[in-house]
Length: 144
Image 1 (cartoon, helix red, strand yellow):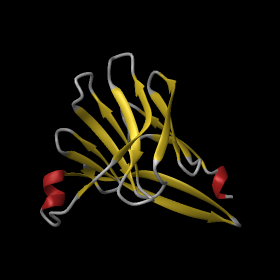
Image 2: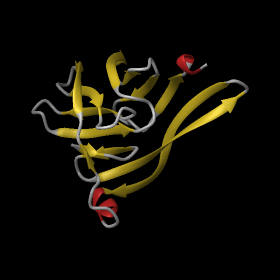
Image 3: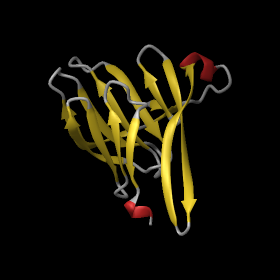
Image 4: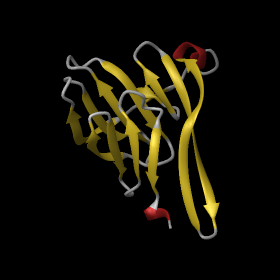
């Protein structure tokens, strides 16, 4: 189960709410996602007690040189995807949950600090592992 909001959620309960948007340019569309605000799991629970979403891991995962493990998959709905980072003992460090870009099926390590995420509809983005709210590149070729 993960926090079922467009967000980065940390093990200590802090949350960064993320905002996915789609921009139309002629007949093509481009999507972006960026941080909106900081909150906590407790702050969200104050207004909604049903915040958790079941997830399914897909086969792709990465073991990083420091022993951390990145995993990806899907939420309960067809449009939801996630990436999670666990330490070497399996304890969750952070998770990125997104309702806009479909399940994430593949993770590729680009540099020691960045990964490329690929969704089931061939949507890709690049994320900083240490600062996962920094999504620096998005490929929308499937959307044209």
